[in-house]
Length: 341
Figure 1 (tube, rainbow, N blue to C red):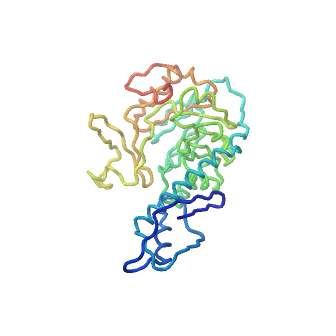
Figure 2: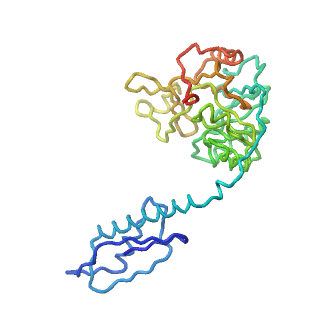
Figure 3: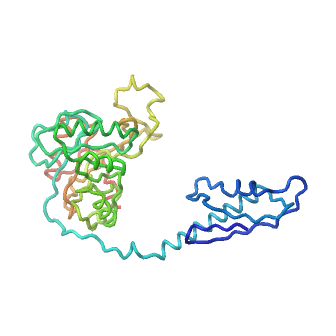
């Protein structure tokens, strides 16, 4: 038998009866070595007691099976304990008075050429951290990549923008939150933190966020019903970032030296997906942009919307902004995302 205890739950798994050893008998060291190979489970051995008579043998496969069975039993016991504890369910939902005003318009750009000459009606501009861009004469934020290889590199870039007067940054993971706090930036929770319900909005506010861009996987009903203690926004236009690659898929065909940063991956149907590099990681973007300009009346209670520009020309940026100001239908292939699923 093998008994596991995690400080709260105790489980016991039973195996076959040990055999008499024909050659080498099983030792306590042999048992401990096999029973503590917890691999990718969340468990590790902290203390043990082994009861083993002399002259016995148990196949290694039997010990491995015993360990796997015991771990599965402990998983089930811990899951049941979690369901029975009501602390989370009893936590009151955060509340915020629903806004009836028209959402503010925020644009996220990839390069300086995409910044419109006429910024009328635009509340703020978001700049990518990895590019040393000039700061426009408007409220400006900086977007930290959701993949972080070097915290020092992130800090160096943030300090450059801080010297230019930028005080807010988008944080798409917890590492970015801690770096931003350390350098004194105002934190805006980005989609990478996957804020998808009222509890997670409440939690990210406790982490220090002053506003949140909600998960792009939420439906329209979920977005509008979500109660957030801080202003909530949503991306309503753009080729939404999908997959994140540590190993750049474009390197199979060209080197970084030869790369013009205008790359795509093509699937078996001939659909092209833009690929961009961001400080050591590559991101796959959706093949067509999200378009909600003609559906904005359904986004009740949203404080701001983000137009996420990546590969668009400067002329196309202006066209899209005007379309969103006037609630126009799409003039290109598009997706509604998951908003109306």
